[in-house]
Length: 284
Image 1: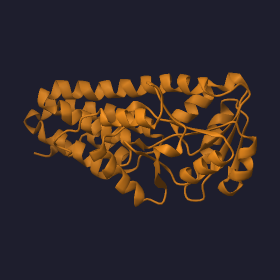
Image 2 (image 1 turned 90 degrees about the vertical axis):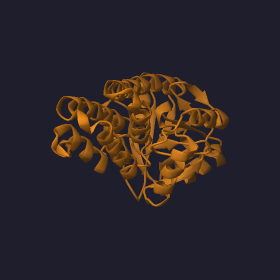
Image 3 (image 1 turned 45 degrees about the horizontal axis):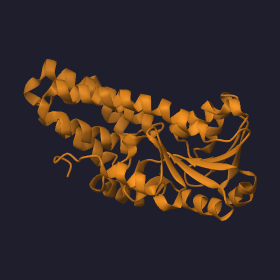
Image 4 (image 1 turned 135 degrees about the vertical axis):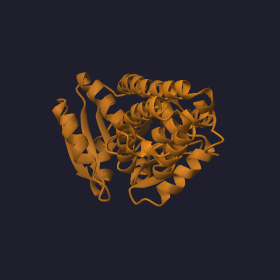
């Protein structure tokens, strides 16, 4: 039976996975809610389809968006819980959504604390975690420079959000970044995924990190712990990122620190975090 293909929860989830719009954490939280709704609807209307339908949906999420770590982590978490029954699987999806929401709030506080008073911050992309940290730091009198990529320009959307929050902000082209960095105190970027050795970021991040290092400006990556993927899942994500002109794989050694809601990590700490997550045999 495939009657669930027409259910609103499945259709919402499918549309979200096909065309994710927004930061990875935002997309992951929405997907978690839709997946929990789908599992609960399955119990009410087609219990005989459990667990096969849930496994099919989870695998489709990973197949379509292997480089969006919160979606991959959500699918993996639900598949790890699937043998406990639909109640356990749905609770895991709802718990995942709550963890993401809490982690963004905590991460914004941790990130804001690392920004100096009246500091000048340069960012790249439209990470929701970075946006939240910058808004949390606005009382420090900061100013922000958004670097605009010629491949995928999220800088203007980020700049509009920060300006609406009352933060002085300007947009510069990637070609202007080397000169701009001399007036910058800190570079903060987000990440689509964290792996044991590398991160997946927007195209241009590696060059930005190198330029910043050349002039002695620290580069921080802000990412929730749910973006950390163990090697089997991260390798799949990295393959997808390599095929995308909008993404690139960057060695963790290129950054000074990886900032999560668990604290500020060096590359070794980030590696241990990624490797601490088990992988469902259904995704291995």
